[in-house]
Image (tube, rainbow, N blue to C red; front, side, top):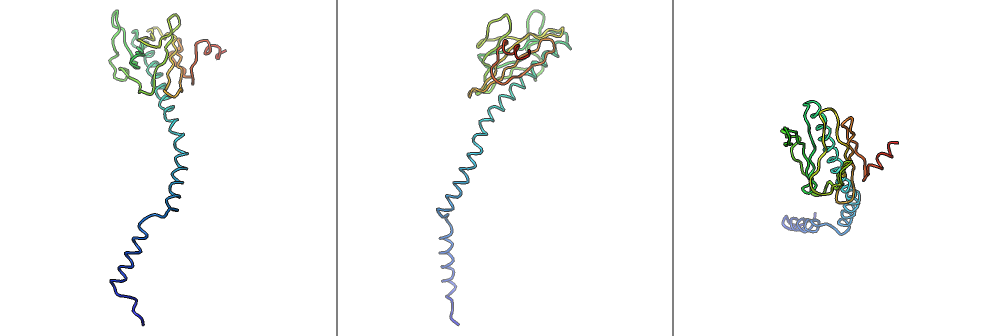
Amino acid sequence: MKPEGSISERASAQKLASKKRAGFTLLELLVVLTIIGFLSLLIVPRLGSLGLAQLRSEARRLRAVIQAGYELSVVEKRGYRLALDLDEQCYWLEVQSEADYQPAENQLFSKHCLRESLSIREFEAPGRRLSDSGKDYIYFSPFGYVEPGRIYLADNSGNGFTLFTVPATGQVEILEGRWDFKDYEEREK
């Protein structure tokens, strides 16, 4: 029987084999890079819809604040208004106190500023000028009426939602894209 080598020779051969196997072959690297490429093709387009989801979420939050202002004014029998600061890109509820308005005491309706990628581009109420800067307001009557208003909320990539207040019910309708009062009224016919 022929000896297969000493223990040290076998250990050296195993070390050499493990060193050769420690790295990746070019074929293995290409397969991994191809898989990563295919996954990125599937994932990257969905990241754009993440911005749209944030915009939709902000539109729903603003709708909830407007509807809460309507309900609070009716329940408390006090005037409320939604304050929009188009320069700072913030909004909040204010309650009428004698002849002036003060920020609402409830933390849920305190000043909320939009993320940098989102903005209130326009606000319009019938009988007033179109606002794209400064402060403006939507007024809520304690007798169950909200002033008609149109708020255009958009992101940096051109996606947007238009919010319309429904005067008699205090509801807010959210439409995808930029809509004018005229287009909105024609749509309802």
